[in-house]
Image (tube, rainbow, N blue to C red; front, top):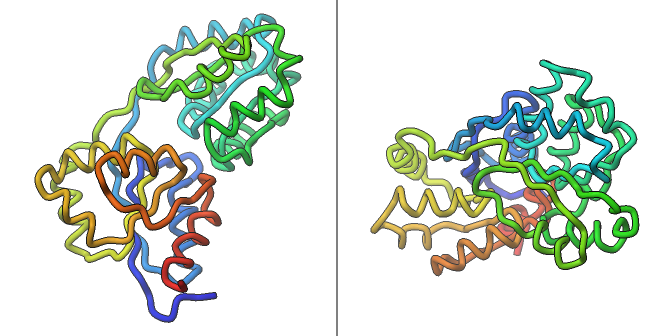
Amino acid sequence: MMPITKKKVLLCTGALNETNNTENQYKKSLLESGFECEILQVLHFEFINQDELQKHLLDAESYSGLILTSPRAAAAIAMLKIQNPICIEPWLKLPTFCIGQATELITKEQIGLSYILGSDSGNAKNLGNFIINTWKKNCKKPLLLPCSNIAKDTILKMLSEENISVKKIVIYKTKVHDSLKKSVHEALIQLPQVLVFFSPSIVENIIIAISNEISILQTYKIVAIGPVTEQALLNFNITVHGVAEKPEPKALTKIINKLFID
């Protein structure tokens, strides 16, 4: 069902992904459902430890598979492939465990891997359970986990408790976008009805940006991408009106539509 009148949605995201327009897919889905939509870029990313990542990719025989928990992790490998295509070839026969359609899309189209599992899991906890329940007996060697410097250790801890070894490599840094405080205030002046938060780090940095004006967030309908982001909001006593269980445009649009239909 379409909203009767247009409602404004503000997507509080990380860095805009020019390689596959992930953020624009969310915006497109909302526009098609009758919403107005703007994007607030909260974070930006810097790839690091590329030499170390390449070393491990070239040593695929030491691993049972690859875990990619974000589009940015996949993009880092895609960039490395451009420089040295041979580093991807050994992974074609190994499984890649992904979270979300955006990560899967980059993994398929830009890295060239097609043996992808678990992409509909929606979050780290679900992907961890998927690996444990369906792949544990095949994990005789470690799984390779490239991630950000602020990534939660959810999957690593879950798998370690099941005696599944994981090699974690930090391959990108997450940084606060320049002039975030100014950008947040300019975005809120446009009077959006809904604010969408994509990650715990985005929640934390927006809270810092608005500092003593945190109560203003109670005037909006707040939507979180996933339960971990929801918990980050609840930790600041912010009411959450909806949670998209999967990091996908359709899941988000469905939740926001429901806010105005109920």
